[in-house]
Amino acid sequence: MRLEFLEIGKRFVRADGRPLDVLEEVSFTVEPRGFVSLVGPSGCGKSTILNLLAGLLVPDRGVIRVGGRPLDRRSHRIGYVFQKPRLLNWRTVRQNVEFALRSDGVRGAASRARADAVLALVGLAPFADEYPLTLSGGMQQRVAIARALAIEPDVLLMDEPFSHLDELTARAQRRELLRFRDKIEATVVFVTHNALEAVYLADRVFVLGARPARIKAAFTVEAPRTREIDEPYVLQLQRSVLAALGVE
Amino acid sequence: MKIERVAVSALSAASILALWAVVAALFPPTLLPGPVVVLRRLAELIATGDFWLHLRATVQRVAVGFALAFVVSVAAGTLMGARRLAESVLSSWVLVGLTIPGLCWAVLAVMWFGITEAAPIFAIFVVVLPMLTLNIWQGTKSLDRDLIEMARVFRTPWPSVMRNVVLPQLLPFCLAGARLGFALGWKVVVLSEMLGLSNGVGYMINRSFSAYSMDDVLAWTVGFTLVMFAFEYAVMLPIERRLVRWRPVVEF
Image (cartoon, rainbow over all chains, first blue to last red; front, side):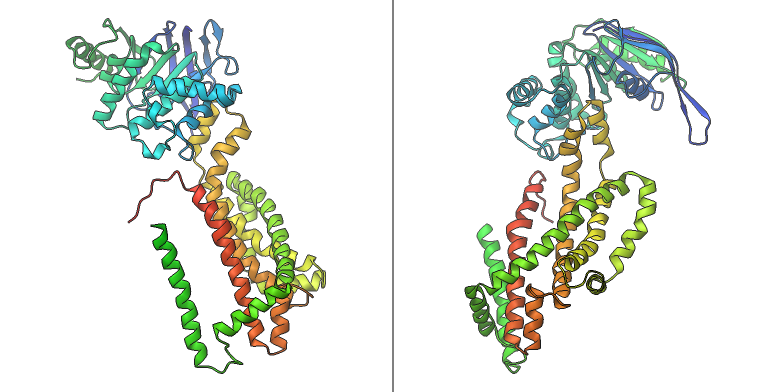
């Protein structure tokens, strides 16, 4: 589904009562099944954008549209992957994935089948009956991705999902994500502070400025999805993104 | 591995009996009977059915008192953990409840409720309640908010949130509270029964004491202790083991 984030403004009130303008006038559009990265410095409002998209917050100005209709948490399916896996450690991997299906009322054999299918997609089928703490951090995060995909979301939101992993694991997880990316029907919004990761994974990259944030720059990634992270084109584009961010 | 642990526990129990036998040999039998005499007396009590009769009366009182305390403590504890106002209001109640000795409650209960079932049940209720509430309060405060947010984002219906997210986190606290609660409850019920009831393990201990029958006093005590051991090993430990099977085992 097409995702439209139009002229969104968001203000918070600080503890002492003073207003904090987090988003100024943020607008971007993502084509159906598109993969977009949002890059920006820490604290610039990337998570706020995700929370608005997830329906956890309401914009003060502007409108969010999914599939041409205003965002409606009851009818639009939103999948979310957090920075940390946020799994239920006392439930098996499969049960964790099935947990996401409770809101749809999908149960029993149908629920199990969907969980197994999405676990196979992310490459974790052999671990379906394991408990999360026996898995590595990267695998736990992949369970979280599987959980978000299980609901067959219209929009998939990913909040710096690899930022808490060590670099080697993160590299492996990024490759994995690209591998099954084509099987994802959802429109993906991927938030990161890592410019290289942003360019490697996405079709389009939006650069956010510091608070109050707006889109400073937009880049289209003209490389096939089979790209390598250390390709010259990718590295060059990363440099452009870093320049837009104001980093040498 | 398991055989080793069972053997060690058995040896430990045997050493208690051995120590008892040694100390008993140093004292006159009317003061401290040895394990053989006591266990024989216990066997008699079991055979005649007396043991089960009085044990059942005691256990019923504890069960009712504990169940009532559990229901109220879950409500109060979760409220205290979730709302700061409730915490401010109820925390002093909990602290006062914890400090008043069980014996005082047992005495007050008999004064207020007379020689009825209500007396021991009330005493057990009042003693167990603050202990359980405290544990559930702490458990609720330590709930992982990130997981609740995750469940919100996935729009999980709240019964499913309770069953999958909240309850599994609270169960260890409930179990700890229950263990302490039962330990206190057994003590209080025996005291209550001594204060004037006409059946129960505490009543029989008191009666044996009045008749200067140390054999009986110890027989009842040992029998009761064995029942509590059985409860711990047959009920509490299996529950606990089931609750922690998802944790990776680390020995250090």
